[in-house]
Amino acid sequence: MNDTKKSKHPARANKATGEALGKVPTDGKNGPYFILLGTRTRNPGDIVAYRRRPRKGEILCHNHVVHHRWMAHGHNGFRWFSALPDPKHWKECPCGWRPDLGVHHASAGHVKFWHDLKKKHRTQEAIDRHIAERVKARAGTWDEPL
Image (cartoon, rainbow, N blue to C red):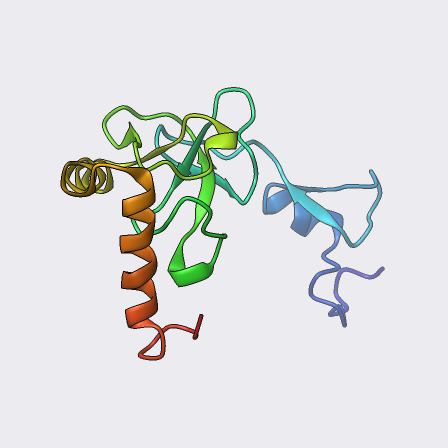
């Protein structure tokens, strides 16, 4: 390919351009596909992946959205994910979500909310009923109907 000629496909950069951007062709030639060199640096507490069980060196976490024990990913805005451990941010969560997956973590504010809820309702079944009523009461306003 002539370097003075403009490529019809911007993704198909020539070797000189790819090297200048810190990229190398995946096929070892002047092919159209490039990957970035180096690994992304991750900090403690960073989310690694959504809807995936944690691998070695990761912890299972979920967000702060109110949920019951068997709430699915995406319902009512609930999300679960794998993250890197950080004792400043992720605390062991007492909410009872997915006991089959074992210990999981959440933000400190969510953990405090659940400690207070357990003091008020005392049993997991009572908490689940309370959450179901709360979520159902909000359905139809901005959430999808149950």
